[in-house]
Image (cartoon, rainbow, N blue to C red; front, top):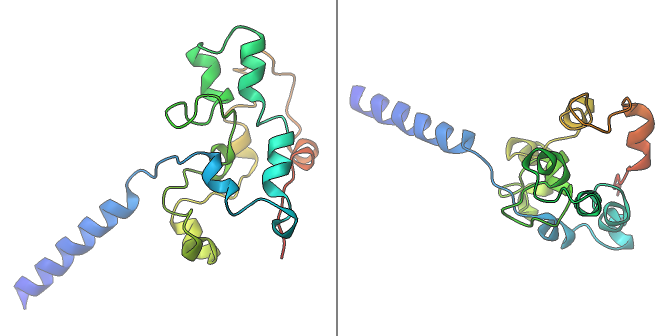
Length: 152
């Protein structure tokens, strides 16, 4: 019985370590597959037209596209797509696990799998005094400008 208990505890520790491991970025194009079109609330299209999708382009216009300090906030993950800008995962968390339809259908499972519901603190990782263009941040006002909420 002790051996069984020890094996069970070891198994739970390993599983929790794997589950707590880092989720990885997959890129906005993976999100596009399920979040595009009128039936899906045009979530992709709203992001694509918004300022976050164009964040990398603003760096290029200023000649800062290789500045690591700028890239921290103007690109979600340069390893996946260095020109993507601020993609879905910058706000919603790395999607390697929650991107699966079987997980996304269950909000609790999605949250357990790395999905983040963006709040003011998420935005303030970039929209803060460290930014050379910071002029204040009005979360309640600005979040409405990028709203792409999909409701069934």
